[in-house]
Length: 470
Image (cartoon, rainbow, N blue to C red):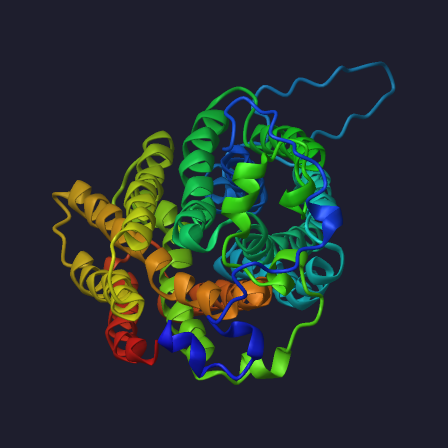
């Protein structure tokens, strides 16, 4: 592809050796014993998606539990009184101020920013099997202790949020590794469309489950216990099934192995541990990818974080309905994203033109929706929910835009490029709370929210003009 030749790194070139010299240790076993033969890479894809979603859900559960933490931690708490024993009941309410909520969100963002580059290095040096497993286990046990930390005081809660933020940094670099190692060059967009769905899937799963558990007799702490249990099981499966070298996996057949390795260079297949960081960072195509990623992700993360609060405070839905309605935007994102991944890989034509089209869809239409959603009548709040759903749906085209561009240009270095997208995502985690703290002083005031919607809309229009840099 002509756009990739702009990169000065030799290994970015499309001039591949048609029969690369592959490390024999990677291809010495025939393998192939699995439920569906020649399809094991799709199982790894789904398992990776589930693990990514688990870490994201554990971190983002707080976005919803902010609402139900206003209620007693355990309304049915009855102490087992004994003579001459004073029992201190658990703290009953957590009425955090706007600044305290922002601090809890910012702390996790700081943890992610600090851990982004170390995780990128660890994945390059040691692969994803043990590094991602370790991150998942840390996330699991940190999630279990969230209720205890909240009950102990804000400083303890901030420390735990920092730890969860560190584990969250493992997600995006893992996407790059999975695409580089397990996806064929012809299936990059398909893999990306699935794996980058972890954020909306986590929202779609966490919000309704949190709504049900918050309204149950177990209360909001059960949200974290359920998430931790699921995380524990998923990462044990990851440790058992995943390997960084598909060529020597017992469940990968020779036919599937050839599909995964087709047209890849030797360095790509064997996992070259050398990364030309400076050449990647100064490349104009990669810089354009990161700029588009920033505007796209800051609006998407704002939706994930604040739509439950907006639905509850501005649209006036109760907690239970808020849980289900807040899940709809995330659910609406998934089918279009998967469809765009398929279309991007299957439609024949100039790759650069295709990526510009998909990228424009992911930025221009959401920009228009952001500007219009604040004008929805208070008498028809469901219309605002539907617009949020449409906004999330069209954002799904990004897998065929900047995401695909970044992986195709960087090839075996895609873990670093996608990890930097995670770093951008961390900045986005700051951006939303900062905008809310500046412009939203009353969470029920629609006009204050509209200012932020205008900012997102205008930025989406402006950055869409940079798409030609692809």
